[in-house]
Length: 335
Image 1: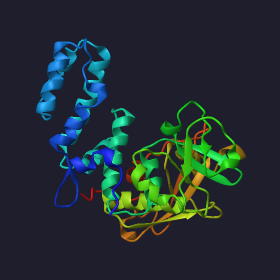
Image 2: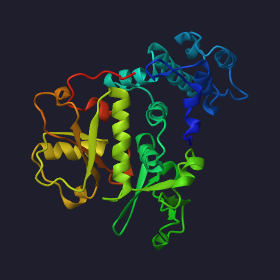
Image 3: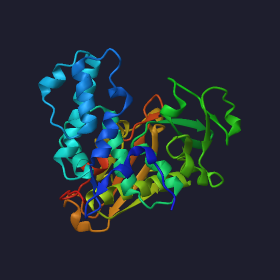
Image 4: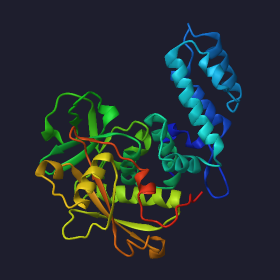
């Protein structure tokens, strides 16, 4: 069976009887060994000792006064964040429970980097056994910012960090008509190169075609279904749509901040101009296998999901919205 996302640390974790991810010393040590936490030559003795001892005992209790005694301000802040993240993981029985506790708290005070890394490894578990590169590439939206590249009727998502720059135009080697000469060369995931995903899954160098009626929207729907099943234990069907026509918007979930603003406007009876409509990238309809899970106000009405891009053509998906924004009577971690 093909493996993927090796760098996320999934193989450093244990599993409990329900399949939940259990933190290990090896997983924690990988954080303390990150370049950002390696003391430079001129680091103070407090920072050096802290780093050395945590590499030996990554669960060691660290007093706030010890971190406050670190001389360098940037290093002190880095240690505050990574220790807060470590303590969150150690307070909960699984990484899934830690993530749910964080997103349900209403106050996420960790840098997005930590949240994205947690999503990355949990999603790796949720998708374990998946052998469809299109689903795996679509799932990268959960934890990687994407840049939208359009050409004629094509809607392509390219990893923002991979292509870099404030407004890059990548060379899409399978779509030479773009004619761009700047940025990195990016292949578009297709049937001809799908098998290459397994050896390059940690490179994030394949573009995803999210054009309507292609494999992209269906693959993203499948990734979302697996995410919700893994974390909430609910069985849903998610259907990609090409447009919202006469459907009653009883309940909707914005999959990103821009989509939430668009949904709010529609919810309050507003209209969308052409420029705003063009920022809507994908629409989905959710139905629950067990209608008894849904709050009475929604009943058997479908739930809609909206994905959009920012005015500067970026997609920053918020997968926590799939867990906190659904009209479910009770929400419990499946693990």
